[in-house]
Amino acid sequence: MNEVSTSDGSCVVRFETCLYEPRHIIIAAQAFTDDYWVYLDGNPNSAIQVVLKPKKVSVTDLKKIGYEFYNYVLLTSKNQR
Image (cartoon, rainbow, N blue to C red; front, side, top):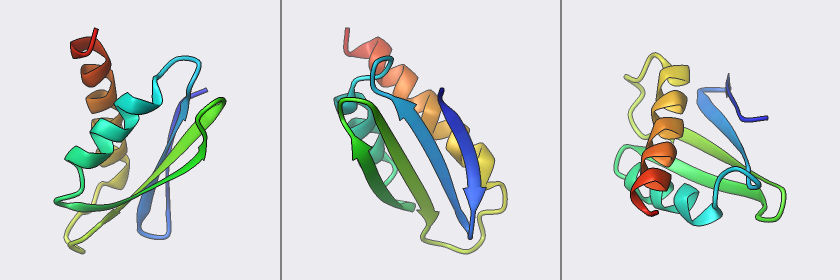
């Protein structure tokens, strides 16, 4: 199950790799590095967890950022086919 949650000033997005290719998640992570610290964790054969932490404190809606990341992965998946 893919999910978006927030914790300690960061956003956590979880992806099941049976549905999303790890390379698409990595491409999205690279695109977000200008504004966020991006941490990837997990097993490419089961699930990958992405932690997004804003570089600027002014970000207020972290859950929205998580869904934007999720949508970016979907867009990357669509465009890479």
